[in-house]
Length: 445
Image (tube, rainbow, N blue to C red; front, side):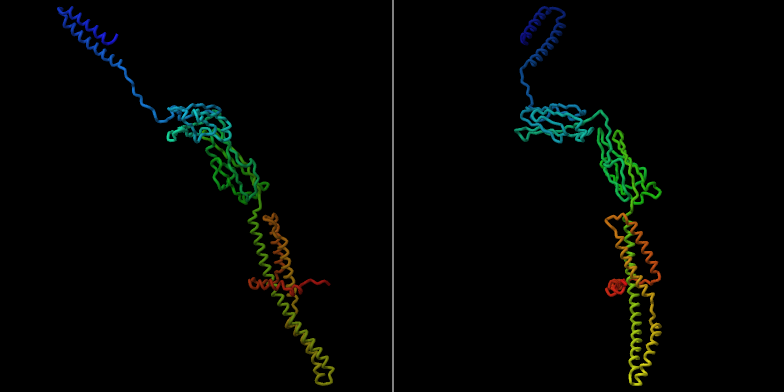
């Protein structure tokens, strides 16, 4: 029944009631009710007529490219599988899916946007992936036919593991290290990262040591230069044992400790001993120069004395010979002169001894000084250092020092000349003079 038919039936009903009650006393009250009923009826008819009116709704078209089901945060357990199909608000056959900064193993199907990942333990054991680290992955959708139509967004993926594996501290040296004084102990503090990385490392030592680098976290380098006086004389076996403890902890206070036992052996302070050796050599060289100056002075004095005495001897011999020749002369005056001249030669002998006495001490002193110089030169050549670090440097230094003291005692009565640069050069030249060497050369009998 349509709205018009309903309207006609209601009008006939109203007319019939009006004719019946026209003469009744209740006509007015009935008409009032009829008027109210008519208003309600017309309101219903109008509403029904509007609802049955045919119309086409206008729908706005969605033209902006977007991903309609992207989850911004993924939490994935180790050894689990992720399979998530991403959708866009357009036909997927014309679009290309891509990932940027994706962690190892995370893939996406370039055609349909299927995101897949299998969190294998090998990824975490090898250090390629880490637990409780937020990996921000950039995902993009590109229209293959319109380069301008593209959308880029991102999501975060976190991996976790319910199995608690503590990270380990692994120094780059063995648990026991032997080292000598003067060397430097240097190693790197490595760590095996498990569920949670070690956030800090605490260093302890049973003996106070002075390290040149700070060790507070994995990857730091421990550097300890060991001084030469570290091992004391009262340490047994000339060694000192030092124990280092490295304790690391993660953010949940799971701890791991690594201990290193360092055995420090007593060693030669070679730089200091080398300085002592060089000083002894310098003393030797200085003393050699002084002895050469002394030898030149004594030898020249001996030479002057010998020449003077030789002059007296030659004069005495000449007068004796002249007296013998003149005594055979026929002339009386010549004969008298020949008798006097031998007596003159005889009188020159005490004069010679008085003026230039034969000083055997000077001769012996010159020979002693020269032999001492040769002995010192031999000691220097015999105790020269061999190699970069001669292990016998202490014994050689001691031997040189003792020999020098003995030579100085032997020459204690010989006045030593003061050293002068110019005179030292002349002394070297005089000492190596072939004539001087020939005079002091040992001759075979």
